[in-house]
Amino acid sequence: MNRAAVAIFLALVCSGCPKRLDFGPRGRITQAEELFRLTREAQDVTATLQGDGKLRIESPQGTGTVSVFLAASRPGLLRVEMFDFFNRPIAVLVTDGQRFGLLQFQENKFYQGPATPQNLSRFLPLALPSEELVSVMLGRVPFIPTERMTLGVDEKEALYVLTLVRGDVSQVLHIHPRHLRVVRSEVQGVRAYSLEYGRFEPQGDAVFPHQVTLRAASADTSLGLRYTDVTLNGAPDLTLFDLSAPEGVPVVEVDEGGQALPPVALPPAAPGS
Image (cartoon, rainbow, N blue to C red; front, side, top):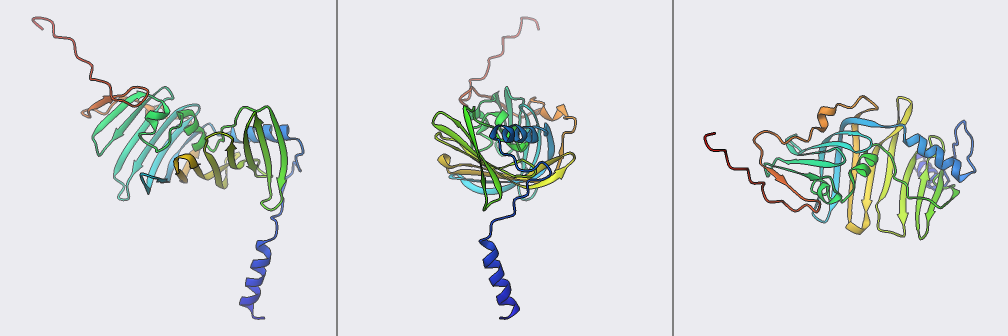
């Protein structure tokens, strides 16, 4: 058998072999509650983020990839700037968790109003609260309220499998056995989105995922974010979250449902003014 044939044979054999389970210095965790606590602590280490990346959007409205600059700070401060292939600005979204401002360069309009999921979906084709968007971009998985939980191990993928249950709703978490970060999250029993995290790299005292994929099957939509340069847990630059409209750009005030409100009439000028 020549070398090429041997290599192919070994590749086929190894592809069916389970991955090696590396539980790290802590050893194997056998209690679901302990794994949940440690996983939550591991992902809660990251509080702020600033950096560049690539965002791929797939939805019924279209598919494409854009460059992005992001700044996020828990619980709800977020700034996302989008640029096209030629590095021309497309849009800028800013929210403090309560209100939002969206600058659309092509329309030359600045939308502002309550930071509801409907209003944020003007920028991204998914209706999510700002706190959840911030969590996802910080590598954090939102957990469902839990009545009970079970723990298992996926020997083939070499991952813990932690299942959270509340009534008819469950959340299945695939967790890396060494650094205890969620690799995949799927919610069942209710319309929700799934999350996948990858490219975990050491970043200071933490391990941070440089790639995240959010999929909403009910909306046939997915977002894939890949960080190319990112800084974690720095002091947030609060000027990045300024909600003021740019000078000279028409402002459109919208309500909670995203409907434009009529312009506010200015009071008449006083006589002799």
